[in-house]
Amino acid sequence: MPTIMQWTRRLLTQIEKQAAYAAPFERRYANEHILQFLAREYAEVYPGFVIASADGRVTETITGSMFSALDVPRTGTAAVVVGALTERLLLGGLDVVDDPAATKILQAAWEASDLDVMHQEGNREALICGRSFASAARERGGPRAVVGIEHASQAAVHRTQAPPYDVDAYLKVWVDEWTGKRRGLLRLPGLDVPLREDDETHTDPQESGEASRWIIDGASQATGLAGVPVVELAPHSRLLKEPTSEIDRITTSVDIIDLIEGLLVFAGHFGAVPIRYAEGFEVPRDPKDPSKPLLGPDGKPMIGFNPRADHMWFGGKGVKFGQLEPAGLASFVTWADHAAGVLRRQTKLPSAYFSLDLKSHMSAELLKTDEAPMVRRVNGMGRMGSLNQAYRRLGRHILDIEAPGTKGRVAPRWVDPETRIESQQVDQMTKLVGTGMGVRVVAEQVLGWEPAVIEKAVEEFETTRRQRLAEEQDPLERLSRDFLGDDPALFG
Image (cartoon, rainbow, N blue to C red; front, side, top):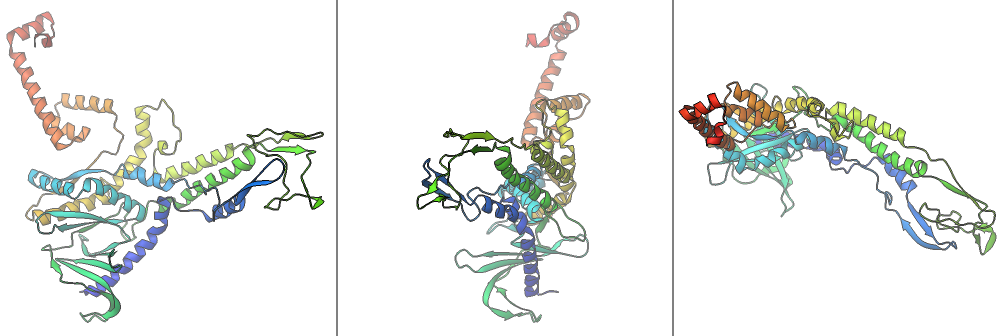
């Protein structure tokens, strides 16, 4: 059995690997990644420029920053992809099949831990970094369970090598904001061990032969649980491979889109903007040496007019002005559309996220068809994927803390990822209820209403139904309807 120091060293190594893997994808998601090629080109092309008066005197010099006065284009495409998937991977809570009391326990814990918000953060961090973690614990001085979402750069887990592959060790590390020292929490089956990093190296007190600066910091706490109440959230998990980031698969496409945007600025500046020229214009001469032109701070000859498109140009005798035929940007637009199409094939996102094939008359059916690949992919990660398994285990950990005797099956309640078309839903509900399906089931499965709303709707439906049955039994109402064709509502 590994010792505390052995577990700590092993999981610290895993945290370092996870942080190094996630770092480039974090930068792309935060729109902080700059292509070095573009950075060098922009620094060379836009290092600063000079504004001169008509008589050739320098009136102002604008100098660029370390990269350039014009920032290198960054499209934020990685954030668009991650955000699109995150907003579809939504949970409405956790239920226990055929056990309303246990469902109320899970719903209360879900809301008390702000998981209606934080589960989205967990999913987002998992898409960016490849994984994130949800850790459950008993609240201080109380019986309830609290759940926290942890980042892959601060936490790591180890799983058993046999079914059901539960977590048997978990470590979280952080920096104490007051002392600047690193601290940690090691969670083992039935035990939480506080840790801290010392200034000196210590040998393992459990005589494993290991040496580390991490030592136990205070008394360990018994959790009363058979296992470690931690789950790993990993949308892209495999049996023998490490989970991967959503951005990992599209890194090249994201960089290409940024490259196209940067080159598009160059093309627009030097090719698409009309280039004008002057012939026979007298260049200002150096007063000290009239045989040489007057040079500006950039070492180039200065001219006596401002060659900008928003200024009037005047010349003397023999001066002619002309304009070169500007180049178009159609090829760059085609290239950008192609790159966005490749990215769309990789991510299965609808065209609306990339402004492709959008038409003002797009019908509801066409919209659903456009979204269908993404919906299948989202369900493959959520409702029918590894995230569903993780949240199911998280619900079981909460019940183990608050209601250990509960044996019901936990079922995560996923929100329908498809775009809701109200008219279609109303028509579908009307037909299903008309064929005899219960209102409660239809409201839950088709409309996706909250349980409290469903209860009120069912109560109102039953009240209305009883009123109609009573009206049908009234002889005057029946006579008016059957023989005179009157609307019964007129006699209400």
